[in-house]
Image 1 (cartoon, one colour):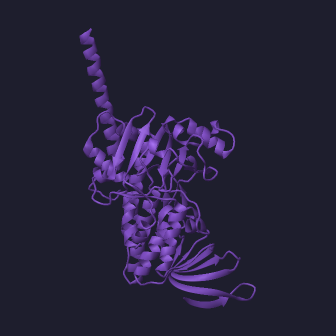
Image 2: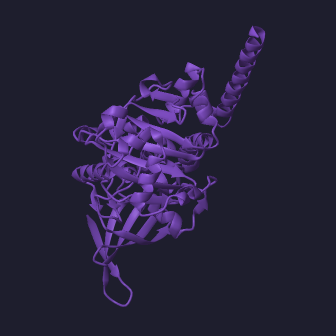
Image 3: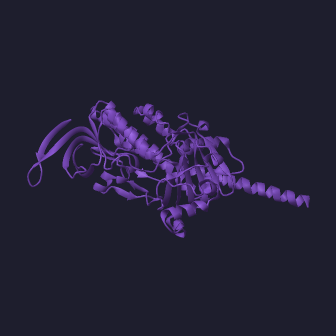
Length: 438
């Protein structure tokens, strides 16, 4: 590792480390980017504020993220972990209506399965693997300042012992997730157009799982308008369970976090008996107000990837997919730029990334306004449409040959209207038949 020395304020010397690329954050976005850049022949270093393993949500992956994980060289180590394989997503509601998506039936050609993972373990596995590949990863190291000089940069970091040092890099990939390092340092954050929501969740020992659900898919329960439940079974007999809704929904439940979550679970018949009196692995946790965005996902000398660009909502498990796909694309562009190529970051990174973000955004909004439920739980379903929507739920939100990607903002509403008209016609026919019989 190339190191130099420079004068620190008030005397003394700062150690200066020189790399080609500095990656901020050791989650999936950061490790995918680091692996791709390392494979490109450039010296890359990751700094991570937290100590691993550390907990984070985003436990149900989508098939589309398998492609960047494969290209980064991570699949062999992931297959060795025995993670729960995931083949689809099942949606149910209070009326016992079911929509079961099987990824093998999707419109887009691609991966038809993925994993459900405990992220603390999953992220640590990726971080250790990228270290094995030769990437230096420095944990418990926080970025406090960045100074750009064209595309070159000098980053000040502070280690767990309070020691400061400088890292000089030719490019920075900010994969800091909720830390949002560059957006916060340079005032790039902007409010999302999605309303604030809240979640309370825990890991539960799922002793009655086999009686209620097959473990190879995520279960989404439409609890009531604007409120839904996730159930993500892991291969070790533990299931992640959480409720998501507007903050006001949770005000009706009092007591300790565990008492609150147990009372909410008891209010949903789809899971009440399944989790009754089962052990909580940790005290329920709460997150709220997670939606945020940036005007621009790149600048001279840096690119933002993953949740740093925009985090929408956990409803369709889009987080890790957007994180790995964006970091994969950004890393490939970084390699080309460092090789001397002139990169149009707006055309080659920002615009393609926004295709995926905006597609997922339309589906998130369609879920919360009830449009998707009308399609999912319709009495009669158009199988071609279901296949096309299934591709979106599998994470293939960049396939513009799919009309439910290319026209995501209009086709969902149009289909819901057609279903509503069809229902009215059926109701009218039934009414006329009853009158005729009388």
